Amino acid sequence: MAQLTTQEFENMIATVVERVGFNRFYESLIKANALVSRKRPANAKILATQLYQLSAGLRREHPARYAVEVVWQDMLSKSVDEEQTKTIEQLIEQVNACLGEKFEVLPEKTSDLVTALGAYHRGLATLTTDEIAYTEMLLRATTDVARFLRERKADVLAAGVAAASEPQPPAPEPTPSESDATQ
Image (cartoon, rainbow, N blue to C red; front, side, top):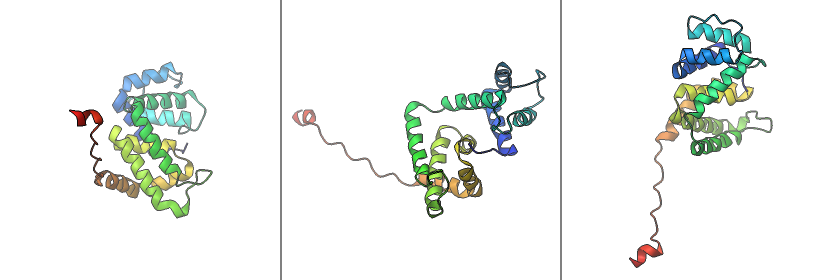
């Protein structure tokens, strides 16, 4: 898992608060013993700062990390069904095909990686939002891939839009079955 920057973490928490609601998210954190004080923060940004410090940006073994991850995954699971998960996994495999054994970016496959990351982003974004898709990609990325994604974010997003706007090949016409031919 890549390390989120402070701004990326704040955006993630703001997205969770927007989708789940501040009170419900805060109560989830309290139930998980993720916060050391029951004093409710004034807003999502202050809460994000507190959670970032407690979890070290989701790197530290701390209840805050686990609570945030559980709420994030629960939020995603409500947007993606089992069939869509299979499609997303295929897109992830396309990304992994551009990486080395230790999931490092292979220099000779950078253009393929931009295309694969773009398709992955577009696949996630159609089910959620652009911001959620980008954050989820960062959360799942290795440090090397996250650096690549941040450096080429505009190219990756453009590749995803280009892939989505390409015309799809026409579906093959159904062949008449024997029962259709006898009627």
